[in-house]
Structures are given as structure tokens and as C-alpha cells.
Length: 423
Image (cartoon, rainbow, N blue to C red):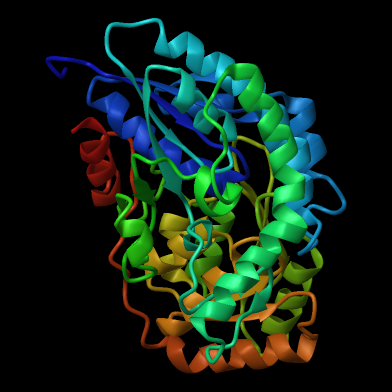
């Protein structure tokens, strides 16, 4: 036990990729003897409790399900508005109230690590005795004008000058983001007596003045100089494993019975299922064995054979054990999936649709660890061609630098983050 236990709040909203880094860091802090609370969506309570964290739901189960099952959630333009209106805004009040209770119930100042989407934490910083760091699960959360630069799903050409890149962000703010976010945040600011909202909401205000943690490796994306000057530092990937669970027997036997298969995952938040089917067909066309993983809320995984060359697995499944035995890793481009592929040294094919997925795929391509396609326009033939291109790299896979964080054995990223938050 530390001589002076501290009190922490981890605040995150979104899918499993947004949750797991916070669980990993929170568990590390709890294992050091600190009091750690997770504020997030109600369905994440069992995972938080299992990791040794106290839990407060700031989004109820109905709102969680409504958001993640919204038909427009994965549309490149409309999706962020859905996430903002249906998840981020409803969480503001409960987040402020939960932080208020924690910040005023203890001798030590409350220390908070929060997602930039958890704007209730940013409002709370102005009115409560707490110290806030912003935690960035993906590079796209730190607005920049350097390559690679994406506006939504559009990759800004390298030849576009810096002045025009800044103008593009001003246009996005003026016509999309500010009308969406500023009115509701201004009402909350006034009602709470918080400071006025300066500058751009998403380009400046949501980021804590105290700095933050970029929860990914420098080899994937180094923190841009602008944000480094504001105190943001890379921690590495705090890869979370709930436990060192074995693979299902059917899957383990399948892996033992032949060449390395292609492993395919469609995403944890209801992203379109047709990508997995197309990838499965592409693997079959090229003569590869394949494992198809489907997201589920079940607490244990199940597996069954689709045929002699294909196995279906319902998540959760231990990617820590599965991916090192894979020929390639096909997924939606979420940051958690990218991190798992990098940790195992497995070549990746990203079928991106929205949010940070295009940017993540481009960063894999730039480090020669993957290929990405836009899932909206990728034809079956394009997926086959991309997978065939990866085949030439499969034999040169090398393990990545990240290791997984297990109970009682946090990886270096978790240790760095915990040290940073306790200093």
C-alpha cells in the first residue's frame, strides 16, 4: 500500500476500444493501493468491478444501446453527431454530479483522466477541486495539420499547404462542430458557473490545460509538437486483458491442424457485418483458412466450425493468444484492434468506415504494418487484392513492442501512465 493513497476517476465514453485503456490504467492504480472510480456506460460495470475499480454509471443501459445501435452511427458525416447527441450530451450532468461527489468526499484532491468526449469532466475542472488530464486513445483526437491529416474520411493531400489546412479546420468548426456543440455547452457553462468557452470547442477547449496522455506508441504516432508543448505525452498502448484465458478448444485444435489462418473481426460497436462476410469470402478465394470473430456481450466465448477451413468465434476471445498464430488480421480499424495487431506483429487489413479508423489505417500503412481500404467503396475484388498483397509480408512478421496488461502484471504503458498520474 502507498503511504498516501490517492483518489482517481477514470471517465470514458464509447466502445470497448475507448474503455479498455482506461480499465488497464485504472487497474494498475488500484493494484498500487489507490482508490479508483470508473465513470462510464452502465453495461461496463461488470468489467470495471472485475478490474478492481469502483463504478458509477453516467449513461444508462437504454441510452448505451440506443446509441450503439443507431442506424446512422457509422455514417462518416452524421455519425459523430449521433455520438454527440445520444451519448456525450446525456452524460454531462451525471458526470458533473459524480465528480462533484468524489471531489468533495476526501482529504486528497481528486485526480481525473478523461476522454475528450467526456465533456462533463472538462466542465467539472472549472468548478471542482480536481486535477484533470485528457486521455487520447487515438491520434485523431489531437487535431493537427501535419500528415497524415483527415477531415472525416477524406485524406488531405500532402501538397495542401499549412495555411489551407488550418482554414479547413476552421470551416469544419464553423459549419459542423460549433453549431452542434457550443449551444449546449454554453448552457451548461452558465448553469454551473464555469469559465466561458474559449476558441474552438474540439480544437482547444475539450483538451485539459494540464496536458494529457496519448495512449499509443510513438512508433504509431508521435504527439504533434503543438500538443507536446501543452503537456501531452505518449504512454504506449495500455493493452487490457481481463485475464489470461485459454482459447476455446475447437479454435485451439483448428489452429494446430493447419497453416496460420486469416483472423477477421467486424468491430465491437455494431459496425456493419458485411465487411466480415466479404473478408471471409476473400480469404476463401485465396485459399486461406479463416477465423471469424463476432462481437457479443456474453461473458465467455464459444466456437464452432463453419467448414473444414473456417471457424466462427463469438467474442470475447484472447487476441493475446490468437493473433500471434494468425497469418493476417482483418478488422474495422478501431484503435484497440490496431494495437492488438501491432503487439503481435501481425500484418493488418483495415476496412475503415468512420471516426478514427481511416487515420489509424493510414498510420499502419506508413509503418508497413498494414493496408487500409474505405469500407464504403471497397469491392470484393479490392479486398482480395489487398489480402493478396499482405501475403508477401506474412512471413516477415515480427512481434511488436507492446505487451499486454494482465491482472497483477501491468505493461510498461500502464506503469508509465500510473507514474505520470501520481507524480
